[in-house]
Length: 329
Ligand SMILES: Cc1ncc(COP(=O)(O)O)c(C=O)c1O
Image 1 (cartoon, protein in one colour):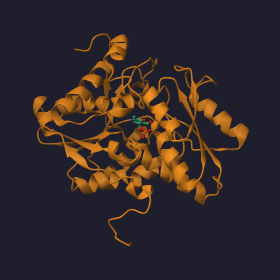
Image 2 (tube, protein in one colour):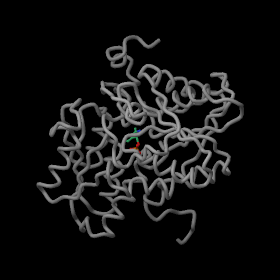
Image 3 (cartoon, protein in one colour):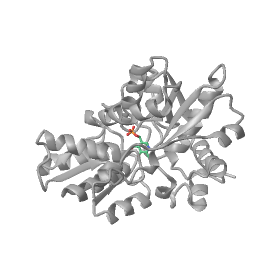
Image 4 (cartoon, protein in one colour):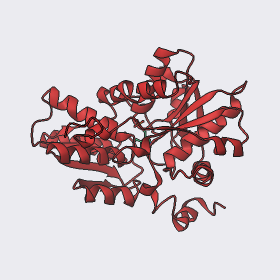
């Protein structure tokens, strides 16, 4: 069959995710502007990270850094690992993922089911500590000669978003986008998408959604910062990753865990979208940004990095949540 409607591999199913207008949600929040969600949870592996997993591997193959049958190592909050596990299956690699124990059991189990080796390290280690999960992943790659995908510094991460997420948002909104709200784990999504959108229309505002406890908001604003702990997974850092171009940032919104969780639940109740914790944080930031914005009828695009299934044992488990946050309702 040569039907153009039929994909020839999983790779062709990545990206081109829909954008949804969150009308009921915006109405319930009494907003003067409209928030749109870019549904990255609809990628085959369930997150935005599918985009970079395939792109980074393709580029490493092209430059000869990754050899046929080789081993990929990556430090991940889970989703990049899941994306890489898919590529490893399709292209015949072995995958070792290195994570902090903060990563939900759901995502760790998912990775194991996909055939990845998982190394889970004690959480809360700062980037200056050799036992931080990123440092350990780099050391493992150095010791074994495996290829470190290195999403925090590998520029093909942001490039994937510059080539796909950015143009999609631009085309899907017909250029009528006024602001982009995203979180930063590696910075790839925000930098690649933000750069593309600003090149098309310099007035597009790029807004960083940062969990309270992360240092990024302070670092972007040139302030001293002390990082703390927070529950939201996948975004926030105690350093500026190589893929985070802070010159793109026009505004910053800090979000408390309880507000990220509350927003996830509100979007579920009003729109039926079952989202992960970083999506909750990003939507909470989009709401706050909308309240700060003058005028009306501006279009705010919020990236929704992943869905709720990876968090059934955490933010969607009331027992876990009340243990961590105290009662939320
Ligand atoms: C759930 C989740 N949301 C958001 C992000 C942030 O994306 P980026 O690394 O492109 O900044 C990540 C990255 O790990 C993630 O796992």
